[in-house]
Length: 133
Image 1 (cartoon, rainbow, N blue to C red):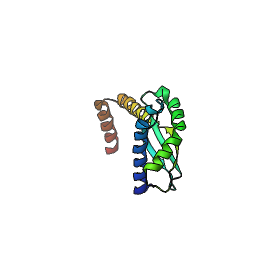
Image 2: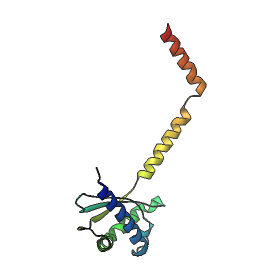
Image 3: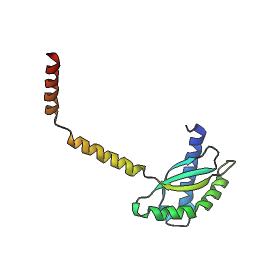
Image 4: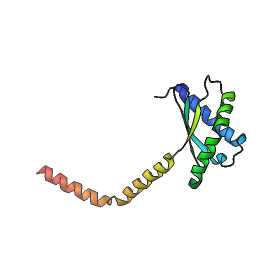
């Protein structure tokens, strides 16, 4: 379970990386990243940074650009955040949005396959009659 302190650190790192990408990073491909979540290890040695992009076709290029800018981002984080250690950053594509969309599509398809209300009611009545006898 993540402690309140770790949640605050994760959110602060997320905010700072987003600002740094907007203001300090010169690589235009890295600026296409939308930082969605940060998960730091308990000892603050590693931080997994999850990102997404508006255009799914450029995600691999954006990931390479972010990995090349990781050193600049880490040193800038170290200067701006009062932590004993500055975590090493590793970037991962956040696929939770696509997963959520696939679940929504699955639920919508199940909703379309449901029988009409009249059909359900008739089946329940016949089952109740069997038990009453």
